[in-house]
Length: 246
Length: 147
Image (cartoon, rainbow over all chains, first blue to last red; front, top):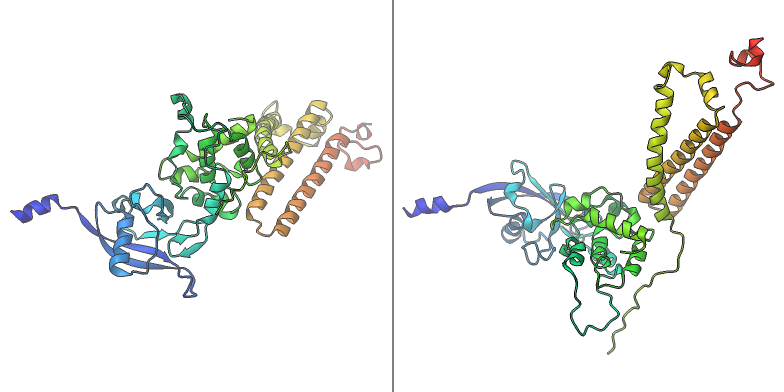
């Protein structure tokens, strides 16, 4: 009887092949694909498969992850050619009759395996001054109407995973471009009624490498694991620059 | 120990932003070109005898009319600048060395200016029956061939 009940509640297990893009700066070799066969369950995510590989097959496989639940934004990677969070991608939702290809996000320098240098991405983020700029002293709560709050609600959801910026073809060819994530985070403050720094931020994004480089390919909107309408936010910033105010 | 905080960047005084105006130009000229190009196609291929009417005389007739001179002139200028600016964007994306980029952009604008000057000259100085032309090379409707 016991086995019957176990089988009843059991989660289906199946075998998948993962091709992981490997690169080690110390062995002097070019980046290459390496395949791993693992048994996973219907409830497993790509991150679980990566864990299984790292913990049971090859401990040198390198990737970033912190919270492992889609909040910290550490494990953005290119899975089957699309930027996703490994911790939010269920393996059963991919085509498991084919191998699953996992590679680092594009446009940023690869440090090892799936780990890239995020500094250029953070630099663009810092450059848009992603903090509240207000002249009065914070002695009491700054009130805001629900309508004013709704203007930038979508862009508060960003977790800085770089999935959008590293899916942008303009960013791939021109690393100077601020990129969608920085513009999203500028949008979050530009359209905040409590903020007084929109003029400065709009001026920064009116730069040669600012919003005008956006070609509206919608790659960023498609890549965002938080469902932010990134291209729309960029278009709103463009309009704000044309108007001269938020 | 004291922490030094960089003063935040402040808005610069007003300056011409070519990227912004380029972006606006692409949209405005794009809309204008849709009207101009389809108007051009309609007038040339649809109205009256349609495509069968097109010959040397048809073109000569159009360019003797100030309305079509201005229409074609607008189409020429808007389309060439629109196209060149689009090419410039692609060059900016893909040229890795600054020197290469500058050279390519320079060649683009030089070509654009040359084509605009030539096209404008043709539209405004076009004469189907030049006074010193040999009659057999001139179209039948010229006075020389109608005597």
